[in-house]
Length: 126
Image (cartoon, rainbow, N blue to C red; front, top):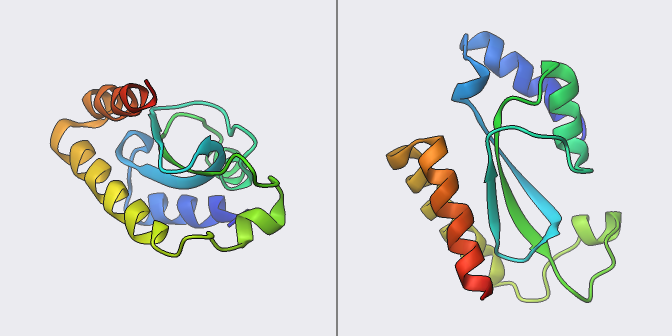
């Protein structure tokens, strides 16, 4: 995954896509579990997969949906990222919420979806 930029670049070139037409979905242990953040561009935020994509595309201008996998009591290291969740049912919840967010993106477009998805998680935090 840390070299995913190679595959993303090949995919974009093969299908002759514009960066504005792609969405990269990544896990992010810096975001609390089950929270999602959609951005239309930006830095890698310390995520090695995004770092590779930015390097190979020579651009930060692509949408990314960050899926929160962070837990308060977890050690944020390689073992955490490659480990399993304590509750096995969490996988189904992540997939269901991810599909819900992808549906919003497809229905509303990136910009409108960003406002809906990011706002939805802000409301849940309150």
